[in-house]
Length: 276
Image 1: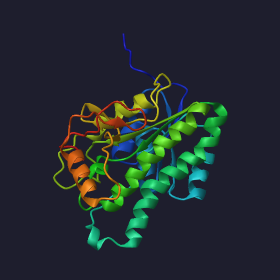
Image 2: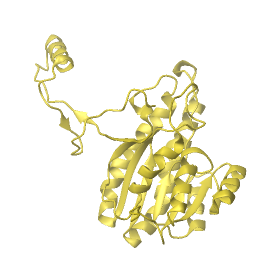
Image 3: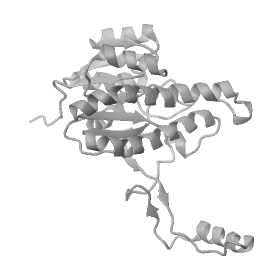
Image 4: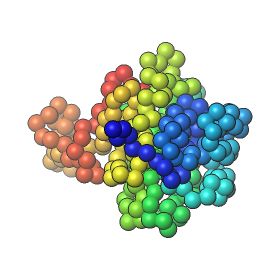
């Protein structure tokens, strides 16, 4: 018997869905019965993908409030939102311009904020919603992408807070740090096909999934839970720099005390070393 979860009767909006990971999500969910709406700011690529998958398309840049609200109005009531839109490029920090930094925030953070906020009232009124946001393994640190990881780290923090606000309204929201070969992958990347991340994301979108407020690395047939942890406090004389120096040394060398988990998570903050 086929026990694969289906999405019959569910309406799913995927942003950044013309190519790569977003397209993979759209394709799988459509195959599992969802009515999928493809969104991307590349009109030509979005139209082509929608035609190939046989799904609806709303081509627009969701990094502004007005455009994001227009997309939601055109889509009508949705059950699932996958906020996948984003851009990335390499730029050493010393050469990064303020304009480039702002662009990274707009297309990675603001695009998530605006589309989720636009969909929020309808989901809250329906007392049902599944939202998946997109961060990156780069939040652990990656040279040449300060602009990108700053935005993606903010997406992760935003997701944690929105999960708290959404729970009373039946809205569940999780964040994925996907691992897949896309146009944004670094040169020489050994990332697996983008399709390998789709099933994990689909499960987080399903009505039977009870997970909310979490973050996961997904892709390549592997998933891992991502959390932020705080170690036990070390006491030190607040008036003496030398005492603080000793306390820092103890913190950096001691492994005896278990960490305190921020947000109630019990997993260890980790990501495979060969993932982005």
